Length: 392
Image (cartoon, rainbow, N blue to C red; front, side, top):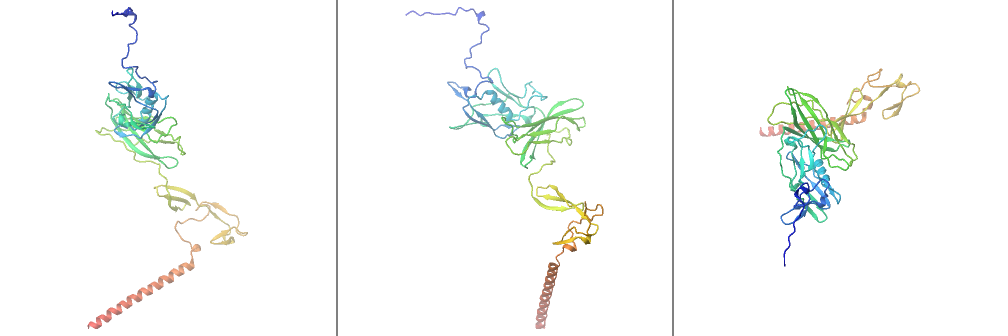
């Protein structure tokens, strides 16, 4: 048998611009379907995702985030996964938010080599951690960990501080909020921090984002707040009957001073959980002030009085109730202590509403008890005298 060899006669110059063959297979891109995403091994490749529900419990600044879910079907692609990881990690981008020290924009993207790259916001307390143990795929056959290991290529940098606090919506339900302040810019005259607000209770239709606000705080050379670009935090509640929660954060009391360990704390708020009325107070102005078990006080109403030209002409209706009569004249309504109208003394008992019979019963009872006690003392004294006489 004679062996025949063949040689491609195409000159190298004609194929110099052709794409090289990738022996590892085609690289993933943003449009690659997750169900087609493979992890290549030494001898075989394994599907990373299947149709099901992906659960992600990430970490940000060393703090565990709330678990979020992404439904994976045959149309879910890598871009959907990147957006899910970005939103559920509270990474904010766009607008005036700066790039990191390497010049990369916060968020996520697929590199030319098919690698998924996530970039967190500046600041050590904004550092996002994604590992295999944080990604769980739930399918009809059970739960499995997703074979995706994100390695850290750049350590988080930037001075920062974190504050956690509770706010309450229109139904009194508590909502968790975390504010992270990161040093963004410093000049000879002033320096600027950027604050990021996250809330795991944020509910936006079609999204898992936990980001609820951001803004800038500028300090002067004495550490006093010069101005704040934005103070509003907005927590959406599309799947909740209560109203969306919009509130302002007051940064006026902050001080920007040199410290090895920066701190940030919410010292006061004007929101409260639901409360029950425990007591009420009636003031001299007639306002009824209710006291609730959650520490709040609210005005419940106001007592209005009326005077008559001839009070003796009022008709008695019983139970201390009177009605205008023919000779009483017209009523002149008004507030207490105004226009000649009487005053209100809180807690006082008037003669007209004293139960005389009950008061007499209490008086007789007290008198009887006193006489009984006095006789007991007298009897005890007589017994002691007899004992002394016996001894003598």
